[in-house]
Image (cartoon, rainbow, N blue to C red; front, side):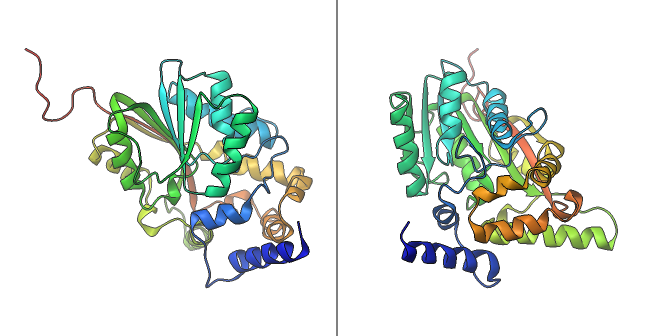
Length: 303
């Protein structure tokens, strides 16, 4: 990278992370982060699922597989993956769960370009079709896919409710929606705990482009899926298998953070000096699933 580009990148991080009056939209954040992933082998940017994983790459794979298996991806399925990042999960699903076809939507052009190259290099371009497009205004035909998935990205969507409506539209009857998602945790405890909750959520929401309209807890999440027409709804917190084990892994392996941009290392390393319960007090992490009913409202029933 040329010195002028390095300076521009550093100024971008400085303005994003340390200027309280400046924020970036989701595409701007991921353009800035680029390929500075903490993972060693892939380009995942998710926090991972740490129930059995012992390193960040394995945890990132495990989160993708948790979503894929919850969605029951299989050879007969046409899958829509919203917010696919650099395509790591799509490649993993294609190689393991082997759905018939995966279409991806992502608003960040730089990620789409690199993800397409990675897919082509692996000879998976006929199975995986990655496109630039919005999850809240999908360029996808109605009732044309069997599964819609979103791995750790729907909190960015403006709004998540609009995404639910679009997911319902493009799913075939009986189709399944599955998300791994970040929402506020319930506020419990006395004043210190509530203050930690407020600071924790506001820092994440402010710096990672989470619209205020998406700041609601599990009961409201469930209700919004139901109002969008979904049934068989489950919204399960998996936060104990995400935040604390990630925090402990990074505290024990601080060299992992050396893969990040230098401007991003400082706040990450400062956070590791605190207890995980304090750092993540305001954050819940949910695995949500729902099904579009086979018999749609207003449809005629067979005698």
